[in-house]
Length: 323
Image (cartoon, rainbow, N blue to C red; front, side, top):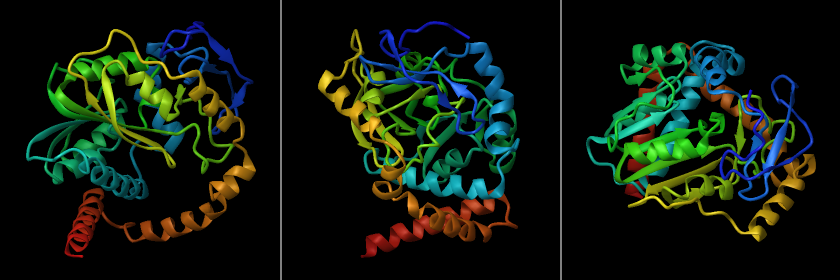
């Protein structure tokens, strides 16, 4: 573990917060907040070597209790993948052969769906079991690796869904993706939203999550290399960035007023806010509905599940257009 108490985004000294419990194991986590950019982060950070070992062998087992995705997770991932692709398509014009790289590709569901909708899609995934599952079940190109070793100016779109929060050096991630994107290319990021109202107060901090983002902090991390062109911050935090013609010399820090407002919002998070403003009381019903929706895929192959979801999605789009 590194004992560096500097912010991994802007290099400022961290403000130490009270210790927090890991939502999975109840282990004690030490969380710091940067007063300059608003990024919450674990302190100290694991080393690069520790992270490579953990994500290549242990992470999926710890959080999903499996070495490859169960069929219910395939169905969930496929549904979410198609929703993400539809959102991206509102801004990024999909032409045949547009090269897309999915970083942290998991079981390959997003890469497969993207390839079926016109992208020349591939991915990288550090977990051996999940990356092999993607290759065998869907025939997609998934490289078993951490982020690194990518060729310059080789992709039109890079996607990272619930990946950035697992990375100890987000500024290095921004510079690496900037290099691998073609001029005018797009970066699509989704992370947990530290300010979201519909997250249980018990379900915020995790050993595997090294950084915690508001929209302000996310924008700051990528500000030197990218312009923010679209975002959503209801529930999870989603953002589309476009590669700058030339990177700035330094990141753009948020105003002190903006940071004060976000700190106030975070301090008000609690069970009352979650249950009523965040409508947490509806979660049980949503989980029951999802359970019965997923049961129809119990005896199907992973590829058949995704093909069915893609067909249904295309039918919905055609119906919408007819209306």
